[in-house]
Length: 169
Image (cartoon, rainbow, N blue to C red):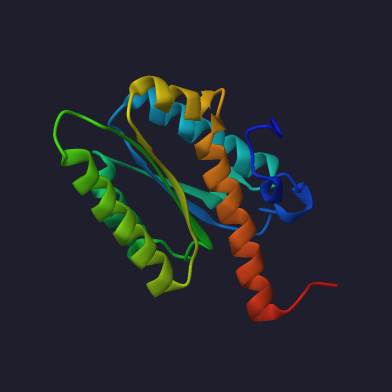
């Protein structure tokens, strides 16, 4: 993990124990080159944190617009329920305001899903002006936001478990 590109609170590996967690990941397939890099880094972060591949559920969806419904479907149908979710995708600004509508709606619904369910949703949805900016955030000079989204979800799931069960001994 490159400390120059990862927030300090996500660098403390002692806060990233995924050994007991189930995580569901929705991956928007639009901008395939970018989202494959986000997905790979998120999976790698989960496994490095002690997660088991059989406790990681993945669902692909067409684009960022479909991310909230993909996670909602996973929330309704996965048993046992995930301890955290991660949304991965990429929206690039175009010639119209289409990107703002997609991003605003998707992000609002992802936040709503998280607050309604009290289950963290890691935000790995890139919102960039150019494809080059997206590449820089999918493994380039700005790190990998898929990795960061997974680490944030793991951290938050563990913090929420402490609320329910108290600190472990």
